[in-house]
Image (cartoon, rainbow over all chains, first blue to last red; front, side, top):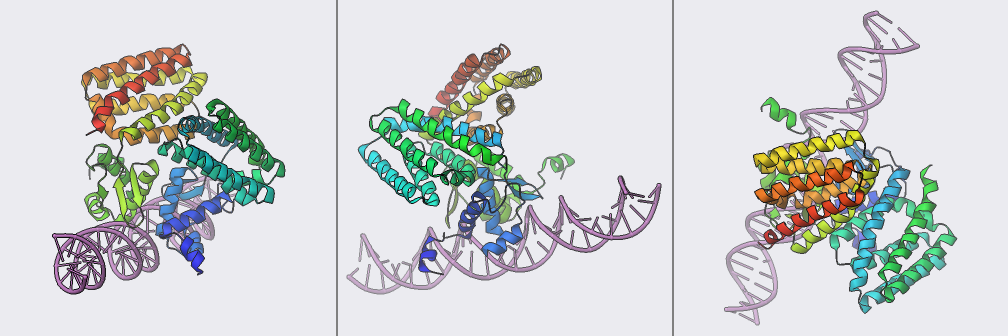
Length: 220
Length: 220
DNA sequence: GCTCCGTATTTTGGATCCAATATTGAAAAT
DNA sequence: ATTTTCAATATTGGATCCAAAATACGGAGC
């Protein structure tokens, strides 16, 4: 194993498989609705079934997989209604996070947000879909973190996870990438002026557009 | 084992242990902040550490315990800020659930709610704190379920779980029990009239009073 | 052909054992 | 006395093995 891999590889097997499983699910390699065969996956990831099952329990808690006693785990299918529900809940929670964040924003916070936005723009112009997705996430989470409500942020993060599989599709389109950049700039602007209302509104539009674009994919 | 116990005992050890752990934590037998010794608990519950660890992973997802690699699990401590945060998030999510529920309420739903309320009143007059807590929960969850948003309800349920330990304290006071009965009646009334605003307002008062009463306990 | 039943196989659930890591305590050096 | 080092111990992490349950399959009966 390369030293780089060794450094990145988590200290426990369950954390390692958790990350791998997440990726497998969110990239769609494990199809929604498909049963999860513990033996096969354990062998693929070169671990025993024990850490695998612990990772699955975590994912169950996050709603990425379902579990039924003696019948095992399956990848959760996200129906159109589910997608709408997730985004609606996100709207509720993120509005709260943004309002609290605005009330507490420091100059250092704004600098960190600007840096995150730079990264987003870099990825957008490079057309790097994967970097774009992670940079975008960093931007939003940085903002949410400023709210000083750790549980709230954790819940939001979990909601993001459940739709990660679909988000990368969104960034495949150059127009969408450009749009995201503009919306982020508008958000940053509102934040600098301390206008919670405008920030919330902008982000709502941002989010609604994403879900509208994603809906077609869900029927497949 | 009595047939009654056999019927109630879940089909898997992890589900059994999960229920036991929840009770141990929410009743305070496992103190907040205390490390969880897997060997000791496994022996106490007469299971091996494997199902115990899976149950702990579930509780970790719910935020009832914390986990650190190679250092194990501890009972999560709920600070005053945490309590306020949980109740604030509940307010956001429950308002949404109630509004959706009101828009979809059927006569059958109202009957089920009335039945749940009967149970609450029975427990309240009997002074049965434990029954009161469960009946109250049934009442609220019945209402939330009517929203037809399963993920939202699941999140709300999880939030209730994290403060369960403290809720039973609230019902120890006869005045509080009486108050709850009255507030539920007002809620039911608003629901029957289809007034979402009133229902939401009533429930907000209901919830805020509970958190205010609970706060003193948190400093201990 | 269809259903029902029982057996074989697959898959999950759990117990035990060993390995890896963290913690504790005591001795040695400063 | 304080700090450091290192061994002993306790505790968690994971692999393997066996048990229990569900599923798949095939034949008997209708």
